[in-house]
Length: 114
Image (cartoon, rainbow, N blue to C red; front, top):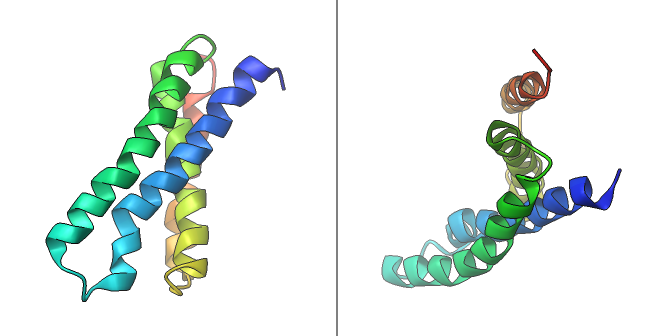
């Protein structure tokens, strides 16, 4: 895969790792004040944006906006699945996997040429 196609995917992967921690990491610390969780999430999200914006900017040279969004959704689900199992200790059940698979099929359809 040429680097101009791979780099946006790698940046989206990194971005989604930060995003997942920003959105869901605080669930492991429910006793922490909500305001602290919000500010910590904002701080983490800054790193997410420093990867997401270039991923979309550079990725738009080789992918359409809908294709970038489809890639992001699949990457988000893969990252979240690992995060849920590893960090939160919440395994996914068959219905979660089935739902994620349907979203992956939808993303695949976005890449079909008309």
